[in-house]
Length: 88
Image (tube, rainbow, N blue to C red; front, top):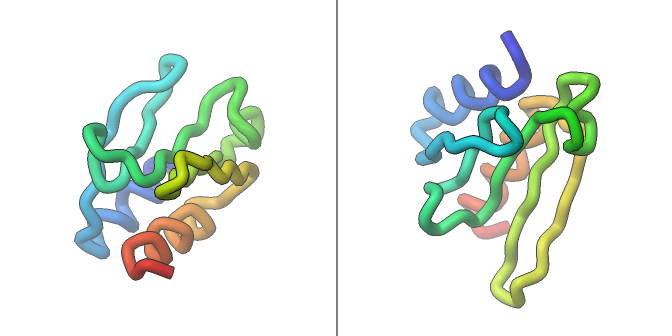
């Protein structure tokens, strides 16, 4: 199972809403959905860690700034999404 698949299973198990779209021919997980993306997670050939099967997350804030973290496991990305959900 890939890190992206593991993340999707974790989100489903925790009943956290998300949608899947596409980015550079690979899956892109959008939280909470593709219309109002608070963060997205990708894993493709040019993402940070993608060559190693690891995830990159981009988190947007109210000031239109974006935090990007790469080389993440599914667990790491899940923690970021849980923090967003809890308003941390």
